[in-house]
Image (cartoon, rainbow, N blue to C red):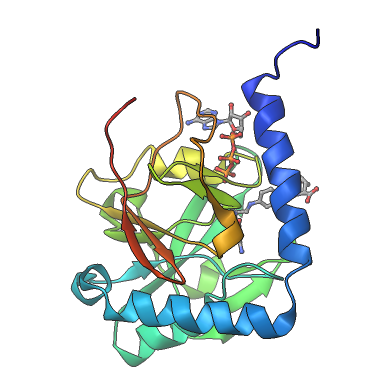
Length: 202
Ligand SMILES: Nc1nc2c(c(=O)[nH]1)N(C=O)[C@@H](CNc1ccc(C(=O)N[C@@H](CCC(=O)O)C(=O)O)cc1)CN2
Ligand SMILES: Nc1ncnc2c1ncn2[C@@H]1O[C@H](COP(=O)(O)OP(=O)(O)OP(=O)(O)O)[C@@H](O)[C@H]1O
């Protein structure tokens, strides 16, 4: 009999599966999914109430956040984007008012230029869109596996609203394997609506 997979192995398997599925998503469907997700987001109470938005600069076939950034600017909501601190795998968020305040240093992800932006502490963030390759109905997620967001979410205020945006195949029907350090999101936006995640431990 084969040995049961460890959580690390299971997470890695789900990661690879999701990366593959994302790559295979045709552009036309990608655009349709993004439009639906954006509509649900802007219509939601959580978005309307958010005093600002902390998110990430989407690359490749991630749910498009560039349009969300522009929408926030239109609505005069301050936008905060992360810069990776590679030494300790943490994130620092900076207020960004223009794409000209970004530079691509590593990972191919545009990041705020610290000299041109003001930073904000994670404790002050109130509405955070968290990236993920897969989410389950309880709001748990799997990211790229470096722990950047796990470490960040550990420091957020309990009153902060954490949300995820998913394409249909990224919503995992079973419970995802979780570690002690994993923190769940409260809301998941899908192409069909918003899922209110239950936080009951089971
Ligand atoms: N658009 C976007 N921005 C984001 C994230 C994300 O998921 N999406 N992140 C979500 O956390 C953070 C970046 N996370 C990353 C996690 C792992 C690797 C990574 O493994 N990179 C190399 C390894 C090289 C190295 O470690 O130096 C690789 O691809 O092999 C890169 C970025 C912050 N910004
Ligand atoms: N709060 C933390 N303190 C110390 N190490 C952590 C913390 N959170 C995560 N890690 C470490 O980071 C690594 C990645 O964790 P995990 O597999 O949960 O990543 P992930 O959720 O896919 O990644 P990400 O947060 O980058 O999206 C693991 O080695 C884990 O032990």
